[in-house]
Every structure is written in C-alpha cells, then in structure tokens.
Length: 376
Image 1 (spheres, rainbow, N blue to C red):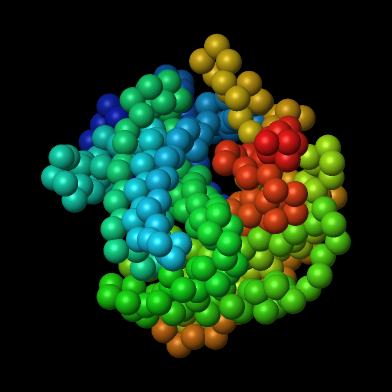
Image 2: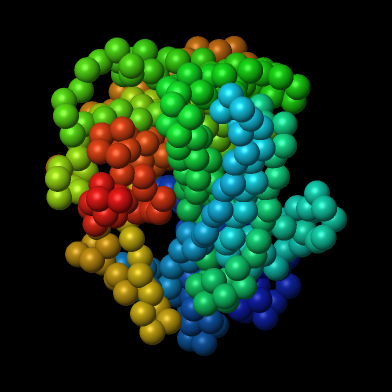
C-alpha cells in the first residue's frame, strides 16, 4: 500500500500525503500485486475526465504487461573428499534483480565482499543448513535480462530456483558417489556450528516425509521412481522446515506423470492447523504447476502467451494425490504459504532420475528434455 500511494501520487502530480488507500482484503497477490502499475492509467484517466475511473485489466492485458519471474541461470560446483563427503560448494546465481527495479535502496542488501548492494531476493535459500565447510554464493545481475524483461516477484521468490539447483546437485552427488540420497542429506544435516537447531528440524521433516511416503521401503514398478528434497524456506532466519517425496511414472516418450506428493513441514506453533494444511496442499500443487506446466516465451519484446489456451497451468485432471504431515512444534510460528512451492520441483526432478536415469537441469520439465536425458 505504501508503494501504491507513492505511484498514485506520482501519476496525479500531488504529494503522497494526500493519497488515501481503501484496501480491499480480498484474494491473493502471489507477487504480482507488489507492483501497482494499474494505478497509473486509473489515476490519469480520472484526472483527465474529472470523475472516478475504475480500470480492470483483461487477462490478455494482465499477461502481456506482467512482471514475470526473473530469468535465471545457475552454476553449481562441488568439491568432495576421498570418502565422497561434500566439503566445498560454489553457487553462482545469474538473474535479473526485480527488487532493484523498484529503485528503493533500502530494499537491497549489502554484499559480504563489500562490492555493493545486491538483491537478496534472488539468492536467498542458497544459504542452506547442510554442513559444508567451504561454501560460496555469488549473486550476479544479468543486465540484459534485467533490461529486456522487467521482472517481478512470484510466490516462492528465490528459493523457487536456488533450492532447485541445490537439491538437484545434492542428489546428483549422492548418486555419483554411490550413496543413498536420503542418507547423504541426513549426514550433511549434522547441526554443527551455525546450523545447530535448524538442521535437526529439517532432518526430522525429511524423515517424516520419507516414512509417510514409504521411501526406501516401497517397491515401485519399472518406469516409476521416488525422489526427495528438503528446504529451509523462505529465509534462514525465519525458515519453515519442509521436505517432499515425489512419486512419478515416466513413459518411454519422456512424458512424466506425478502420481503422489508427500510433504512434511515444521512451521512452529500451529495457529490454525486446517489453514496450514490447506496452504501446504495449495503450495505443493503450485510448485508442481511451475515445475512441469507453466512456461512463458518472448517474441518481439513481449510475452507470447496471453490466455490459458497457450499458457497452461496445472489442470484438475493432472492433479496427483497430495499427503501432508504438519509436525507439531511449540516454537515461534513461521510462514507456510511458500515453502511447499520450493520443494516440489527438485523432488520431481530427482524422482525422474530415479525412474529412468534422466537428469533434468532446467524448468519447466518437458517430455523432450526427459527423453533426451534417457538417451544421454
């Protein structure tokens, strides 16, 4: 509301103190409503005609003028000791910086190397709770993407891509060293040093999800597989400990069917258990939709998809069973709207590898990429 008032005042050419916001407590924002561009034509039209004006974007207007999730490229490099233990990890995150676009210096974060402020909302989640003695994260602003595709926030923000890279990499390391991906993670979640407390809670959610899903004890048919991921989403200081087991079936064509998502989460004190469960279920399905079905492409400087005939989110017919375990904990309550979004994509990617040997490194996951990975 604060930014909206300033934007409206700028469009009207008046002091922001004269702007009164009548906030409607309705619906969800999911990141898009952090931008108030729709205020500008409404204010300018009202000023021109001298009467109140209501502006409603059509879906085509909304999708064409959307501030999409940033284009990102990540490079993760790991170092192992003689026993295959992870002892070093370098994580480069190249992205447009949506927070910088707002032009509010206080929203940026000082960098550790003192080279200038950075958009922490493009790298949070990379500061995980695994014990890795040598861990380096670089936030790199992609000036081309930042200029060409005005980016915004989307439900899950940076953990929606940083955990995709980290959890995929951890899984890949485990398989490369001949170790079980779950046990490999558990060994890294030893709670040493700064990770004390948080690592144990994350480990507990992973064990809870594994037990509920029958991971490691259930025999699945050929062409099917289970994959795991666990996240400390959204912020390290206010994490909600969340783990997912995805069960998928992969056809020879590369088509993937997600059969079940099992999610365990520890969000501290349960203020409203039913709402928590509903949020986790919805977030998990949102994560599935982003992981496999939602794709925007650019042509001639704009988004090509303008309605749901070409932009195809998850449909009811594609919706798998979702099982949720909310772990009781008397600690301070933390957020529940986003963590289950972030954990689903890497769990699905790891399940696909378990099912057919295809390692997926980009989103959304496509049948073409899976089939190519099967042949590699």
